[in-house]
Amino acid sequence: MIIMITKVEGFILSTVNYGETSLVIQLFTKEYGIIGLMAKGAKSMKNKLHALTLPYTYGFFYVYLKPNKLSILKDVDLITPFKNIHNDITLISTMTYLSDLTAQVFKESEEQIIYDLFINGLKKIEDGFDPLVITNILEVKYLNFLGVGFVLDSCINCQSKTNIVTIGEGGLICKNCYVNEPIIPLACIKLIRLYEYVDINSIKNINVSDKNKKIIDVFLENYYHQYTGMYLKSKKFLDKIKDSIS
Image (cartoon, rainbow, N blue to C red; front, side, top):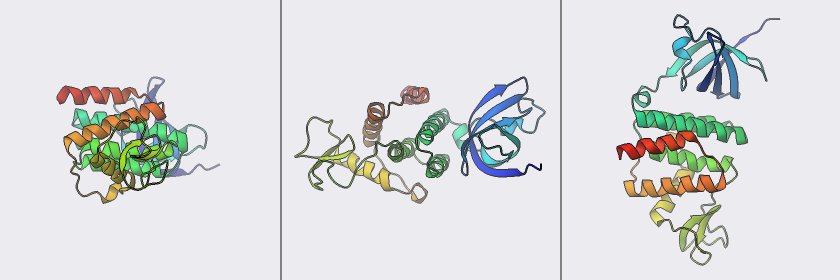
């Protein structure tokens, strides 16, 4: 039986040593979701795959595809090395967190669009856009795939479009329906709504004050903890890095 080599676009989420010379790769692909790859001999410095199978490599992967089994990696063509990200500790920590978060979100819903959101977000960070804003945009969009997204067109209780004072579980809350939820400034509510609907590819400029960025980031962190149950070590490490340079 002839086994055909399949070309897939993908991003290496993680690698695990296998034996003395090989790697097992967790690859997030545009076409097939998250798949496992065996990269034979990739740990050897002399093997052509050695430099092409590092975590967070983004490229075209040529594989012997085996559904529901470990596929075999034959070659890789890099699409972009994300040099700017890899040369900055905050940016590489951001990429690590987004990789972990994206993997968890995809495992919950397996929606193909998650791949495009993730890759497009990384491209914007590589191009110099504010990494915290891009991270928060992805976090807002990912909530929909986790089943705890926001209703941001009207109050979730009475459907009023006026006198909005904050965001609670599930979306906007107006003055009349407010109970004791933490108040979020209207400017931040508008930004979160923008994050929900913006096409990441269409972003040409980002201007968010440091104060509003911090408010939104803290709000989303608390929201994730309360309604998704996700506790990622990479997020804690990213927070420590940000605190150390602030």
